[in-house]
Image (cartoon, rainbow, N blue to C red; front, side, top):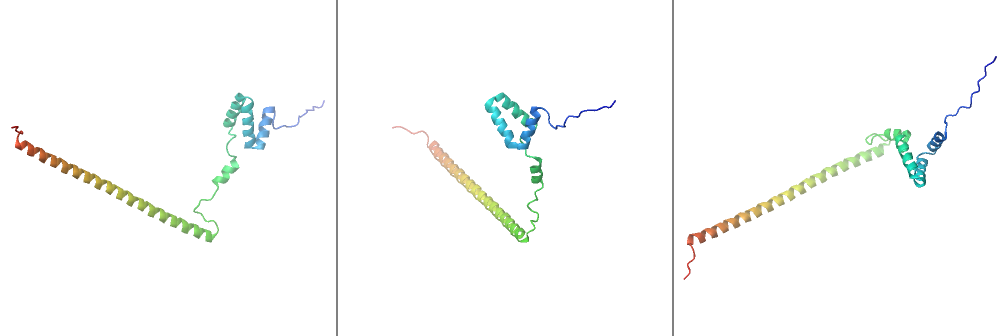
Length: 152
């Protein structure tokens, strides 16, 4: 007696849902978004379920290749390999830092001048008010010394 087993062809995806997901994955993010929009238009509860599934399965994020490339970018202070460009970039950065320091110093002087002007104005108003109060006190004291006015 011989044993013979029939092996069905290997399929990596089974079921209509898995096949649809694989097809959408092959087409990329725009296909997922189009499917979401169509499902929202046709029957919105299905659209909400698809949106929840996309969020749960992280279908709307960047592919790992793009993220990896973004993380591998060289820092701005590294050498580009072109010495003329590196010299130009370094000179430009130095000049920009100097301009920033000069501008910050200008703003500090401007703030100090504004604060001094406000303080001087406050002191002048205070002195005027003190002079006015002193003049009133002097006039009030002079009337009190004369006594009540007599009517004849």
